[in-house]
Amino acid sequence: MERTIALAALCAVLLSGCAVQVDAGQEQAVQQAVPQDHTDGTHEECLLTEAQARKQVLAPLSGTCSAVLTEETLSVCAADGAEHAYFVFEVSGAEGTPVGKAAVDRTTGEAYYYLGDGVLEDYTAFPLYDAAASDRQSWAGVYLGEDGSTLTVGQQEEGSITYAFSDGTQGEAATDGGTAVSADGTLHFLLEQGIMTVAGGEQAGVYRLRPED
Image (cartoon, rainbow, N blue to C red):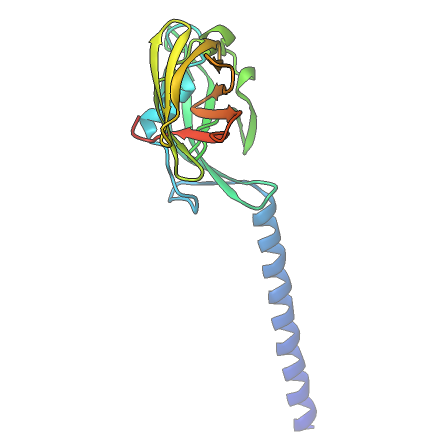
């Protein structure tokens, strides 16, 4: 009888342990599937400063706007499994009336219209987005390539920039909104929210605005 009771007790413990493992697995699956808001840090290296992120938010907006950093730091798991962290700003119009929230990727500098609950829309959908203002963005700055190379861009005058790559390649380019073409036609530049894409020649690649600029 004692052996039977002991065996029954052991089975109960084992079944209880299995139940705990299943519940833990279910809880983990839920956490991975739902975007989480964190206020205590992120797994992704933060390359952008708050000031740079705010600039990305305000640059393409019409009128006099302001952006105030909120206390929430959004972190979303992308389809590729990488975790992306964002600054979240409360944006107000000229009269100080809140218009909506904007989220800026801390690494890439891309801005989004933040609808809440982890939902990100293209920034062009933001109520105050102005395509003309976006086209007037400044090109000047130092951009870092994925291979460690650099691209230094100077703003000459309206419609013209200078460029200099770390390999010694340099020249002038004519701009048209967020695009530019070198004087000899060999290099094409596309600038969008601090990210410079270069096509043509050995310098082709993606360059991101250096954090301190």
